[in-house]
Amino acid sequence: MVSGYLRNACTAIYCWLEAHPRAADAPELAELPGMYAHTPMVVHFDLLAKLVTHEGARRLQRAASAVQRHLDSSSAAILNDEQKKLLKGLASGVRITDLARQLGYSRSSLYRQMSKLWQELSVADRNQAIHKATKQGLLD
Image 1 (spheres, rainbow, N blue to C red):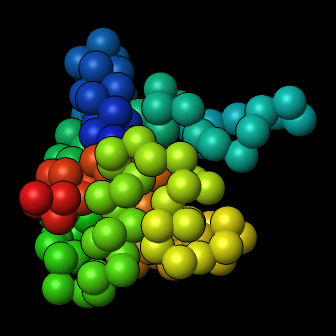
Image 2 (image 1 turned 180 degrees about the vertical axis):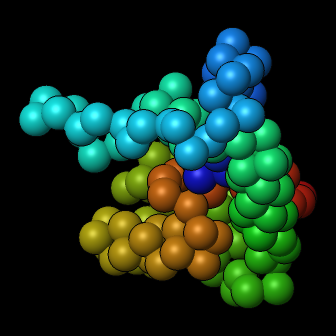
């Protein structure tokens, strides 16, 4: 998610810099993005672009690549057999109640195990866990 956000930011910044070539030549003239009462605490890409030079955008892109490499790093070695069984059950579409029974957990215990698994995989939810596990060959 972070990597995708950074890549989208890079693309938006490059587009903005192309559309405003003089701003890229004189970054000291860029204004800070305005924050309004109704604006969430997020800087929009076009406002962020006003603060960034082409070199800054390239550095941001390298940071996005580094984040992606970190997220793609193998986590197979850190998963135990129970966690692998849990992942395979989730990926196969087994209902939580049935999966808990198969693995010998109560439903609430299974949710705790899922939470621990998300932390091990550095993901936020079931879909991300299944995607990452599939990508890394953990479900084979």
